[in-house]
Image (cartoon, rainbow, N blue to C red; front, side, top):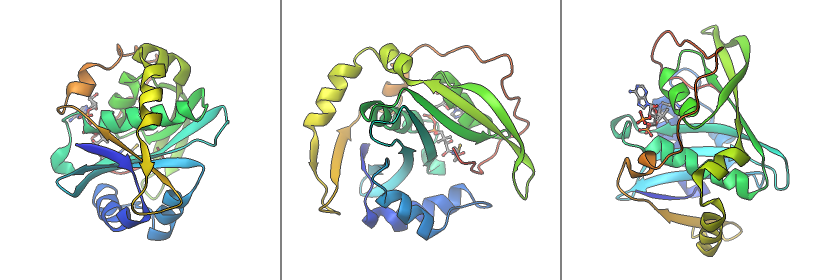
Length: 217
Ligand SMILES: CC(C)(COP(=O)(O)OP(=O)(O)OC[C@H]1O[C@@H](n2cnc3c(N)ncnc32)[C@H](O)[C@@H]1OP(=O)(O)O)[C@@H](O)C(=O)NCCC(=O)NCCS
């Protein structure tokens, strides 16, 4: 699996996965194109054998103290193998490199898989937005991560940051951007090295059913 910065040329494959992953509330092509083009964040794609298997994005204004996970999705037949966690790690590392100290996200209260991933990385629930997701009327769970603590728990954030900077290379799809290619190990290897899971907060969401629908997360 290869993680690299998304380019405009990835838009069609990203949108195909977007629509498959979030059938009731997929972003529009224009929204996604604007996200990919924004200098205030980073989108990453997971590529295998030339095919897009996942994508995710983080908004992290350079020098800002906080960041937001915008979205993350893995192809249905590639889930449960550590790819989502690897993608999330890449986004969090990017946010830290841009100076963020905290990361926020929103996730549907009926999405236990994504919630479990976030909690296991140390995200804690800080608020709920009742009936935020319409037309379904599902609550949004607002979560926050202490990114400085997360990076410290990873142990080698400084070394990894240096390595990543060394791996910057011209982006073949967009001459104005930079691409970072990150070769990862076997699926699951990254998950195995993840920091100890943080205890679920007492007010942790109690998702009622699995969902493949997206929140703003
Ligand atoms: C959420 C998503 C990105 C996770 O990606 P993934 O590659 O399947 O996740 P991973 O294999 O890296 O697993 C990471 C953690 O997620 C949780 N998880 C994964 N699959 C799970 C399942 N079937 N049931 C419960 N928890 C699960 C676990 O906490 C897991 O950690 P563990 O393997 O140490 O137990 C993926 O399921 C997805 O794309 N879902 C649809 C889109 C979506 O809901 N995106 C999030 C919007 S906020």
